[in-house]
Image 1: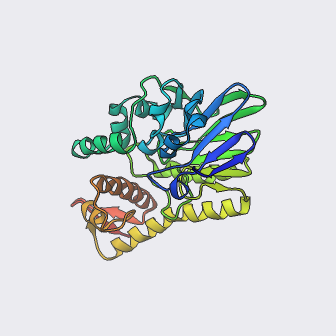
Image 2: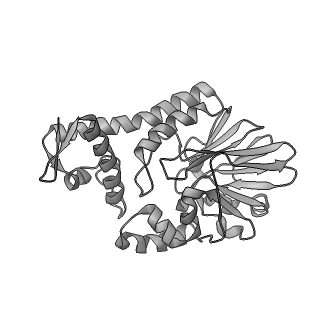
Image 3: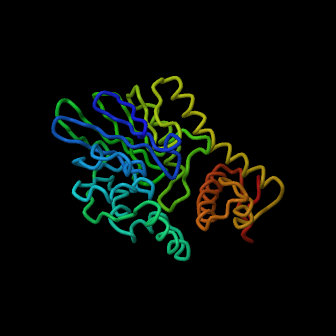
Length: 298
């Protein structure tokens, strides 16, 4: 039996190791008229009727680990922010969402079909920033668009309970991930300021921290999470201080992942992440792009 934390109409089913990837934490919200699931991580497959009988699934964003239980609820409508909608509807949409090359996507599809029970939902429909859902009995949900991790990443706030599901703003020691095609570093910086302003007293993450109920602790964890971005920026500058380097050279050295991580998609995630940091540094005048393909500090 998985651990369950209850907050009024909200039940948080904790995934393995507080929802550490590849698992996640499942939020279920019950009103007098509707039962709603936020995302569907692997733990959804172990919950039983409380999950299987939901009336609606709201995805805070689209990635394989947030769709692992969708196959159990083919009857339930699925809603997702309009910017992530295509990624929920088809493999072609999800492939564009990742942005990985074809030689990576082929094996990846097989892996996520096996490990995450991946099933596209062509019937999924879109919601927008500020969308609300009335579940009955005074239970209401509001979407807050918080892009960066993906273009459509949202917090889902159960307003009557003051509980904010903040998805992959997961407060982990790894820090923010912005390595996919629809990720955006500039947006993520804005999001990390915006999420702190959401009116809540309980914060639920998809992974790692799971539940935080003290605002001071939340603000401290959020600041440490956000600081990883500038730590990476400083590390990239230190690499370039050693001498001019190409993007390929920087990718091999790794900025986000450890040097020994060689999964097929890691080089792409590094390319995307480093590229956005370089764009920022060039705009700030801290780095210069040379005509020979090298980047130079100063």
